[in-house]
Length: 156
Image (cartoon, rainbow, N blue to C red; front, side, top):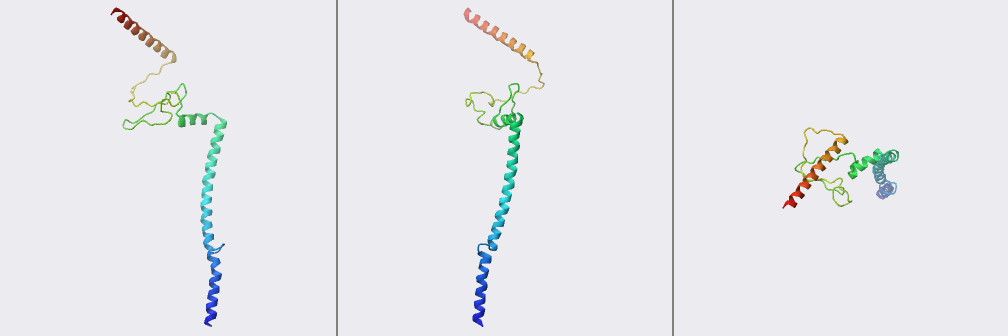
């Protein structure tokens, strides 16, 4: 009787082995379920990324607004009629990137000066004609100064 009990217990253990540790066992099923959850999360994240990229592609194909936005924020570009103003706190260093390094592309656009900015309390907006007149006046003054220096040099 004792031998029969031992044989039956041994057969029971042999039957249980594939159920727990075999190819289709419970532990393998549990691992596969965890992998399935991780892959589902990854697929969801990638699907959202693909939707964003698809929207960006459509924006770039359909209009210039997305191109302008990228040029402004990623490359630091401005239109000819615009003035670029960057506020830098006095205690921090100026940011350095390829757009701010002189001589990288031959352009002086986007360079940041370390000098403090002068604040104009009540700026006056002027038309282009007024600005041209002011430029002409400044050029005349410079020419008069140069002529005066030339005369002084000749008198010596």
